[in-house]
Structure formats: C-alpha cells, structure tokens
Length: 84
Image (cartoon, rainbow, N blue to C red; front, side, top):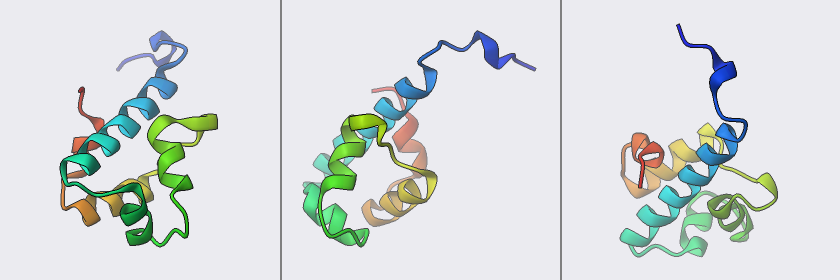
C-alpha cells in the first residue's frame, strides 16, 4: 500500500488541470463549443464549463459532471484522466 503523504503538495490541482485540458481537447476534437456542451448538460451559461476547463478559482469538474460529459461526447470517462 502506498502512502499519500508522498504525493506532491499540488497533486489535486495538477489532476484537476489535466482533466480540464482533456475535456477541452476532446470537446474540440468533436467540434463542440462550450455553449453546446453547457446546454447539453443543462446549464444556462458557459461559465461552469469554461471555468472548470482552466481550473479558474479552483473550479473543477466533479464525477457526475464528467460522467455526463463522457455520455454526451460518447467517450470513455477514462479519457479525461490520460496524460496529454
């Protein structure tokens, strides 16, 4: 078993940034705007998507959002965790 104390101090921040970049990359590959994705997820503005894609003010995607995005884009949720 590994000890979480050896993880870098900014591990969570790095993970959230990687996920946001992957969501953005995949969204763009499908030529889907932030607005279209926001609407598909039931948001009234692009703010939740745009903020989470760049980890603005520590806003990030949660598991429920990621599962919905994966469904809408028809990709495996694991794609969001891959190294770019």
